[in-house]
Length: 279
Length: 194
Image 1 (cartoon, rainbow over the protein chains, first blue to last red):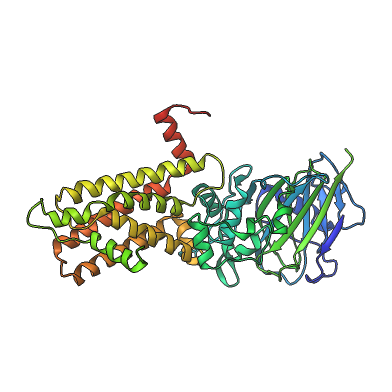
Image 2: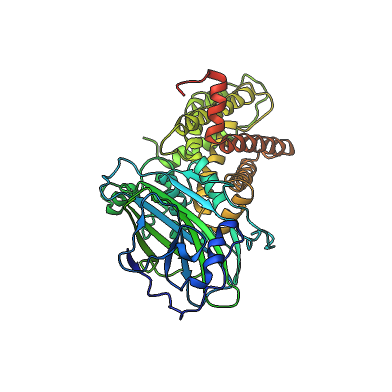
């Protein structure tokens, strides 16, 4: 277990986690284990009980391959009353050879109670999308949508449903506003209008998919990619918790958590690497 | 090799033509002849670009079929109402071409704007762009007619009908998802390889 980085988020002293939640049943993990969770610590739990909780920030912590786990992150710092957290999970095997094309991206948004209507600004709950499981979009469609704003009809429609607007301190705000945060590689690369037009008209392909883009070669090593949107509502303290199901059939998981209300400079995300071993 | 100015001037010329006194007006027939095939191909290509060609999977076939169907429908409308000179002084094909080109430009610019994205999310991905492109096309059509001294109440009515017709057609073609298109194809041509 290696923790790549977290230090820019202030570590608030060990206040117990008093909240999560977006109101869906799966965050029973955050509710049930809140007294145990520390800010900026990543945990795994195989059941919503303290005996099942593993602190993954401990050196050498490894999860059992094939087990069923939910990861929990304690979010510290001066938090807004509620926020949306983007979770990007990339699974891979240690001996994986780069594939010819990247895997599709599974997207899912949990139920959010603090959504809003962007036209009227009124509050409305956003149901989970899709109702069960996850919606699959092509990697190229996912990347083009968040980098360029367009994708093929099916992918674009799914991603329009995946994103949503939520109430923030600055009014009704859409997750699409942070579209760069959703990118899985080359987040700093943004083609100009002429290049975008060329890509749209099929005259050229994006540099993001070019063979010489080294980050793209990393993407080809991923076995599976899952992107989740979930939320937290702070109650009266400065710490919150979000949780996400993970698959343990691969050797390794790279997982990024991005609080969309407190977006940090690129390279200073909370990124973790989780290893699965044994059986 | 014609330059861009020549192309635009030619497109403008065949887009709006005075309705002659007789159906057999040879000048008009010469003007219209020959451009229709190229215009059908251009409309087909623009529908493909508007939908954005999917990277892989059965969506490619569906995208090509929907683009070809849209271009053929517009081509037939143009032939029926234009070549036979029933009542219309505008070219349906050029109207469709201009509206699609505007849609792509608007979508390229607008998709980076949160407000445009929110409208698209509340309706469907192509609706805001198509409505704005339709209104702009209508405006250009009427202004261009007025500049050539051909604007009348009747002409304005024709322009509205054409733009509305194109908008409905493209709303259907761009709105159909790949799976629905494939299901329609399977219904018409059997199960295919799947």
